[in-house]
Image 1 (cartoon, rainbow, N blue to C red):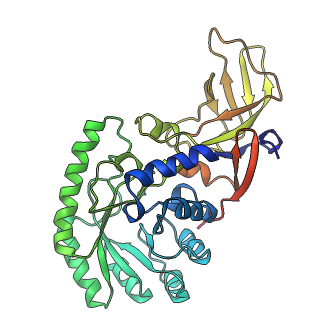
Image 2 (cartoon, rainbow, N blue to C red):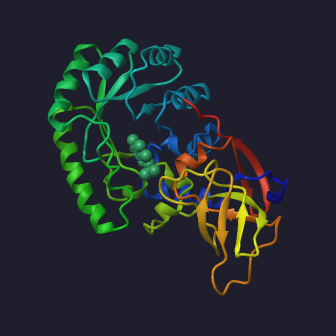
Length: 336
Ligand SMILES: Cc1ncc(COP(=O)(O)O)c(C=O)c1O
């Protein structure tokens, strides 16, 4: 099959770029120094490929659906739900399967009690500056004590510096990571445990070997992360078709809001200017000096601004080598 035979919009992964991204990260942070975050690609086939190629065998997930799918696929050596859950029944069922090591992030008495009822190991999730989940560092020790009193294994701490990872200014990232690491260090000294789980793609090279990095976007990348000058390539695109062209100077492609996560901005169409996006239509302008609009029927590549929610909108990714479709990988960890 050729790329032009794929119905559009089609999620496409350039295999060589993906593999170079895997190798670049594995060279910098081999084996257990990276815990790839499944939320970025939501595919058990991709997870297995990363594990086999790079030797990262422990994974992070954001949803129970991802945890369940990874366990079912035999990828459960060490799965961390790097997120809070109150779904005791599902967590208990997941642990009871017995085919995966299950750990969950906790930041409250309630989430510790859910982990205790399910029999999951825990990491205490600490607020290191991102206004999202995580207890204040001063509460971390008390939650660890509570978990141990319930018979749970407390594996360590997690502190996701999500407010830092996308900062295009490297010096700013360095300074902010130092601050978040200090908060996490204080919490860890009270919590104990072996695991310190931090960061993401934008901070992967700002941490030492005493932590694991929860990076996911580096595998496929997006234009938002592209601004940081990291050594990872844009491996992901969405193939689209020009379905209309106006003599007034714009043309329309068939991939838009329902094919791209838009929270980091519009997708890009290299060589052209995106005017605006609506449900199934992106209206594109021909810049001054360009040779004109592509004719109706032309296939174009569009680049997502945010990889995770873009992937979550597609049922499969076509893994390609240039024009040739090598494999179709199901995005099988979508949903909840
Ligand atoms: C808890 C957590 N850890 C790590 C990441 C890092 O991912 P990325 O590789 O996109 O920076 C994310 C991304 O949203 C996250 O939510």
